[in-house]
Image 1: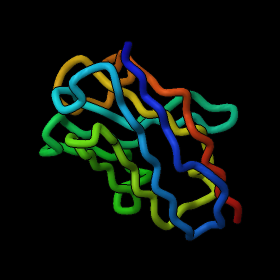
Image 2 (image 1 turned 45 degrees about the vertical axis):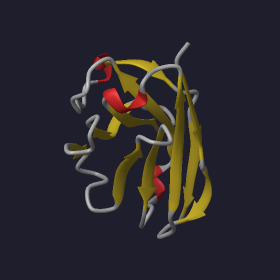
Image 3 (image 1 turned 180 degrees about the vertical axis):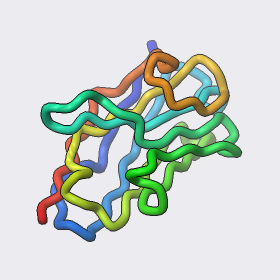
Length: 124
């Protein structure tokens, strides 16, 4: 049984930072592409950042490019999202996801396992 458990969400003021973590279990973490997605209130879930199995490839949504950094620790089975210079529009539930193949792709339909999400709230 694959499990993805996010943590690290919270409330911060604009300009602040948070680091999200996603602990994975139930499969060989290091073989698979992983991603972060988010759903803002009243909006559809959207791509934030994805990373390939080896971390050689990373892609970011234009809205977070230069502020967010995705990384992974394959020895500890943890995915991270470092978020700096947070803005009120970053307020959302953030989800960790895993796919069946090693490449980094941005399409949600490519991801077959999802975490429960962690809330990030940024106040102005």
